[in-house]
Image 1 (cartoon, rainbow, N blue to C red):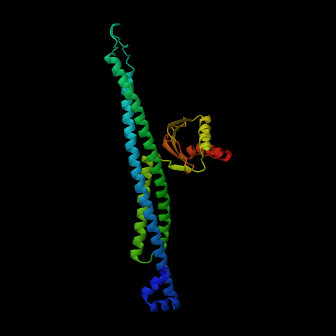
Image 2: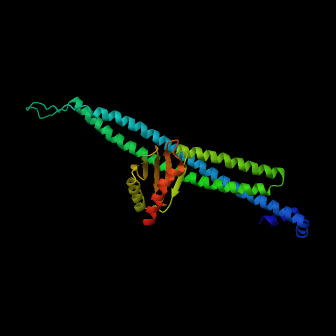
Image 3: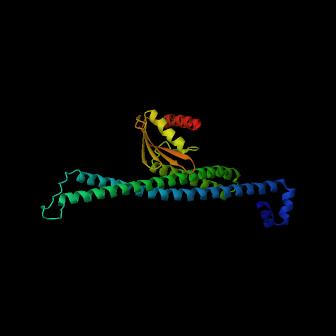
Length: 285
């Protein structure tokens, strides 16, 4: 499509030159190759940037909900301390009076207990919203990462086909954008709790596989805690390694991130503990 447009723009004389001159033919082909690579890179850049922007927005929502949940947990602890105070028994009126009264202390304790129940539910809702937002952020980050890799590959093609200074500048700008975005992706993943080991998605994880995997990890001495729906915290009880797993039922994908580790624990060793168990469970499902 680009070739006819270019030749029409250059005129019929250019068409004859293209047909007769190998040098002209090479020049046109090089410019077409560069234009296509630059266009492909620009498309990948846009997808990556849009996805990263969405990922950052969801991460901000997750952070806000986590802060809200932490504040509610602190409030819950204070309320529980109040409830722990002995309750004064109910005082009844004399037999001649049909009305029974409740002491102020008892009424206050009952009101506090009601607040406890409401705060527990509110904290759970905030935790669930945070988990959902984290999951959405991770998904958008995955798309951004893949698109950025495509942009990097296309940038190489742009650089190879660049002949003029403006074309070389396009390649340089594209390469800078790839590097800058990769740094921002890494920072976002760290904010989401991936630490230095990144995040790995595993597909084919049905509800049965997910439950079997949790059982397998526990059999290896790891502590697996379900914080909210489809979000699991894993304590390996080794080298301060802690992981977080997000399971997405719709796609059958589980995302595993390393939320903490000792400085001397290499990432490869951590994944070597997790992946064999996962592959074994998936294979036997």
